[in-house]
Image 1 (tube, rainbow over the protein chains, first blue to last red):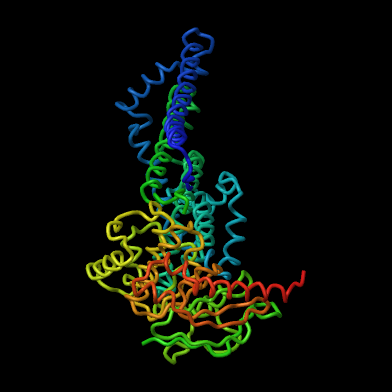
Image 2: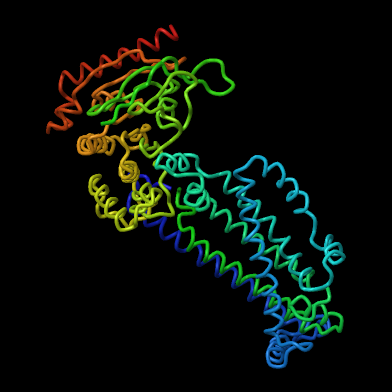
Length: 277
Length: 261
């Protein structure tokens, strides 16, 4: 991005003003949408247009939140349900980071590794996790391992693919610059290739976490006693609709928080991304 | 003191019949600033890549102080056309990068990097981020970074091609100053005739298909600038204009021979 030297000052002020105004109006629009949705929800339930069995009122859901956070649901507090889900996704993510980044580096740097690993990943990636869940249960049982494994598999592919992509797109001039400064192979990897690929790796993690979180409910269908997915699922079986709605909202909020957190991390770790580099 | 020797060097791209460079020989020694001038397609970037060790010659031998060049190394510093700085490091760390790779302790390498930033006139820019710099400033950092690893020879790949005319002239003067202070042989490629005539102590003119040397000149305008004469006074000197027109005529003569239209 380069500003033309002949650009006059009023024009410059105009672009800056427009740039600062735009995100605010976007946020405003988003808030207005959510507000309207909430209002419609409140109106249809308050007017008795829909049975509470199908859609409980916002007040009832809020009340349920208060009740659950004090009393818990099905032998576990709300925090234990949230904690169990977050723990599973954290384990899956850690395992995926530890394996997918090296695998992505290998695919991006080495032709043989690419030839061997790329088809495997591309083969399993498009399969919906629910489709291979029964096989995982047959192989690994109904314990915690199956649940984490399912989430792990969902997160692994996006991170590995994004890493390989980032590694392949490293600017060759940067590699040559480092080589002409005396960099050895391992130093190239540590000082040039990994930092260059970091924006892509972080994008992969964002996508992976999104997919992983959405397979959580599926994973917690398998003989779980705790977790947000389990909570929603068992509440549905007893037609406790307010808990179902509450669970869905909490799942959405956690996903939103994860996404915001990762964006903040991205801004902090790779401030050069999108700076015309 | 460093001596770079090219002996009957040729280069061919894999899978191609026609060589990019055919049978080049020249020496580059202490006190010299050698400029390779040529139109695009004359193989000047290939020539620089050969000397840097990024590609291997298909025939002939390149040696630095008698040792054959095999692959890139810190003894031949390179300044790139598009700066190739690392945006995750600040300016100081970029300059100190070569010393970091060599395992020099932080305090020592930062002290050295500060000296070089002062040499290129960026003493106050140590903590800036790379993307906050202008094009000319980036190239100054590139020059400081290449010098920090204390190479025996400095290679520059059309370093000022992307700069505006005013900045380019400043950078040319800076390069002459750095060349004299650092006392290292410099090899520079460019397609800018005036730049070549102004900077070079030795100028080789390359012609394309296949890339070969069609003329060698010894010039002293860069040295005169180093001795204190102003850029404007040199560039308006009839001797300078004559040399520039001579080179220009040679470039056109080569063109006409190749395509009589």
